[in-house]
Amino acid sequence: MIRYDIVKRPWMTEKSTKQKGMANQYSFEVDRGANRVEIRRAVEQIFNVRVAAVRTMQVKGKVKQRGRIVGKRKDWKKAIVTLMPGERIAFFEGA
Image (tube, rainbow, N blue to C red):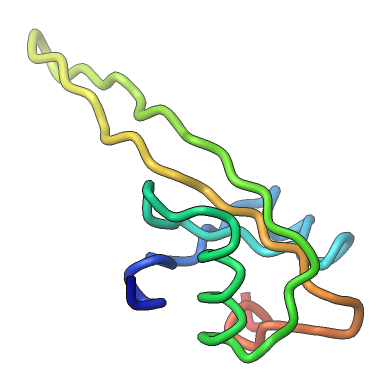
């Protein structure tokens, strides 16, 4: 896989913003078939940083209802990447 196929987009929430400041952790939505090693390599190549650890989780899509029509959002995979001390991702610094 190409590294841009693995890391789909950054995941910015209040919790991820706290993790960024306190634990130097960044959250991403990643490809569901990607493993920790592939995610680590992709983040290191894209953002030119050193990664200390990667944690992943499968997020279940929410069931949504609009009137009588019931649907479900897609399931997706989330990765929490911990960087080495002193490393930063400039993309997140403005957020």
